[in-house]
Length: 132
Image 1 (tube, one colour):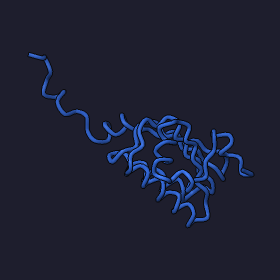
Image 2 (image 1 turned 180 degrees about the vertical axis):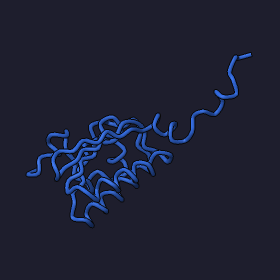
Image 3 (image 1 turned 120 degrees about the vertical axis):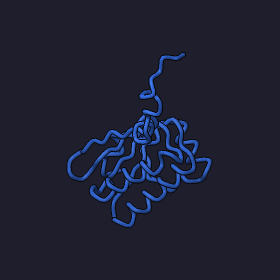
Image 4 (image 1 turned 30 degrees about the vertical axis):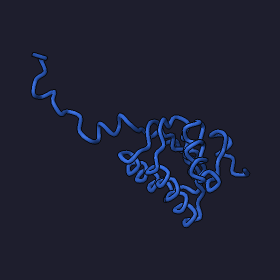
C-alpha cells in the first residue's frame, strides 16, 4: 500500500496546475508603462490565461512590455495570442513591445514569419525607452 489517503487524490485542480506551468510578474513603470514578465510554457492550456492577462493590461497602459525571457515553450496557440494582443494594442493606439530574450521564443517567431510583426527590444530597459 502506498499510504496515500483519498484526500491526496486529485488535489491539483485546474487553477493550481496552470499556475505550475505559467506565472506572470507584473511591474508598473509609472502610469504609462507596465512590464509583464512571463515564466513558463505558453501552449493550448495556458494561452487563454495569457490572453486574459494581456487583455487586462493592454486596455489600461499605453506601453505594455511583454518580457518572454523565461518562457520555456511557445506553441501555436501562444503565437496566436501574441498576434491578437498586438492587434488589440494597435486598435487602441497603444504599444506592445516584446522582449524575446530566449532562443525558444525568437525561433518560434522567426520560423513562423511573425517576428517582423512585433516591436521588439533586447531587454526590458530598452523596451521601456519611449524614444526607441
